[in-house]
Length: 329
Image 1 (cartoon, rainbow, N blue to C red):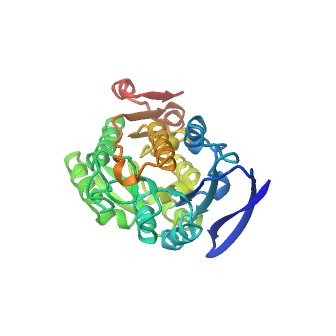
Image 2 (image 1 turned 60 degrees about the vertical axis):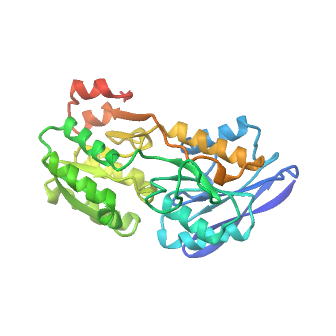
Image 3 (image 1 turned 90 degrees about the vertical axis):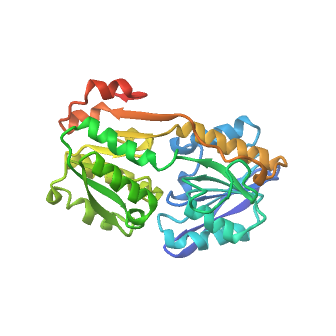
């Protein structure tokens, strides 16, 4: 066995950890995560199990013919550029990352190393000019079907609680001024809902506590949690605080509901993870990322947690339960 260096930014410093890998490993990928600690970027983490399992199924096995270097910005967007440059400096064969902002920093750091990314809207953010043929050193998948998805999540909250009129909008402040924020404000007006900004500038427990502690004072009827990946760093804290306030909430992805959130509407994450693993396999075997179309999911799931509904005293309408792809009881 030989040793490999595993690098990550923590508290502004570069920490080096070591993991043993087999000498037969001859291809190296860099996995850059915006929030997770590096030890959770693995097949043992249910959130990423499908990705690593699909790689294994395709014959790309960590410790045998594959080395995986893990990097994390640990929920600090201001570190994206630095961590991207750090990953590139070790000259991997391929980079895996998300979201658009981190993928953008990776593109700035290299125009030659292939990048496979999970993205929101790569056309709007300027990562590519064509989904069918990216023509840059980047490909991957999107996780939305346009800005209409944001309005759909708000509509589902209205269906769950028809009387809802004041909804907290939990987000990084940047999301409010963008196209998605503008569309969501328009959608809320059509639904007779007032959106109350709950902005978080730093994704730390202390910063979130200050915002979430004010939930009762805002006299809200519900909460809309945005799909900012930085919020996922404090997923458990957010879900627990919203439930403690006994508020119904709409979340972006099923893993929020699996951790106790009330409901989510979003793409089939399992399909997205399998697809990026397949892109990684293709590129490691000679394909060019610019020739691989960026995948757009066609399946979207409504997941409802009845345990949480009961805990906050909410009876979910039968009509909404009938729409659900999965109900957690």
